[in-house]
Image (cartoon, rainbow, N blue to C red):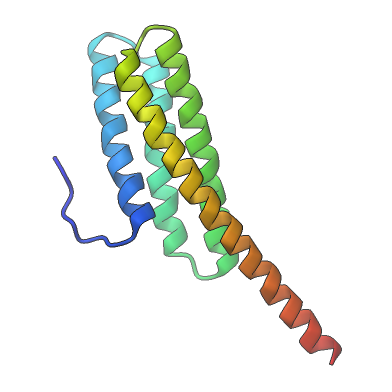
Length: 134
């Protein structure tokens, strides 16, 4: 089931769509009676989008950055679990590589957003400090 196209934010859309794909991976693994690793990848893979959503709703740039930082870490963790599932032959190589590629795209996108946000925070601090010394 696809969500309605009511979101125009690329990172929100990509992280949500990725979560749907991770749920499908979980279903495949659960049907093959693999429960421990599948729950790990489900938790981290769906957490990416949840933290993006929270970050977008943040009240400050620092709140936004904190949630996106968590999202970035969850994406890296998800990549680890996907690689482990692939290399242990629990998950088909083609499926795993496709999800790893999706995950790497999210890592790059969220990483770029974080770098830009951290620079904005630093610029704000610099302006604030300059104003206080004038």
